[in-house]
Image (cartoon, rainbow, N blue to C red):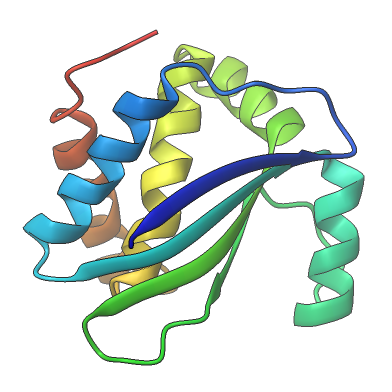
Length: 143
């Protein structure tokens, strides 16, 4: 049975509208022609995510998200997505958007990576941003 779980590490944070967020993520995955098996979101601090970045990716920089693709099949989505709540708050202020919008953008950004979208080159980044904007517009909940 498909599942989407939310946890927190090293911070106190509770995601609002979990059922709606789960449905939105599932709808996004299905719209892209994939099937959900399991997604685990871990909301954490900057330092917690920095340690993961250093340990597993050999990067010594802060980031808002790290996505680990655990999928075994081409059309089955399984992964662990770590999100820094501190970085979400900073970026929301920097880009002058509500924190919830920035959080949802990053939540769906991780899913899009698991669906094969990249963001290293300018054209890939543009396509990723277009997809983020498209799926953000599909939210029937906002809070």
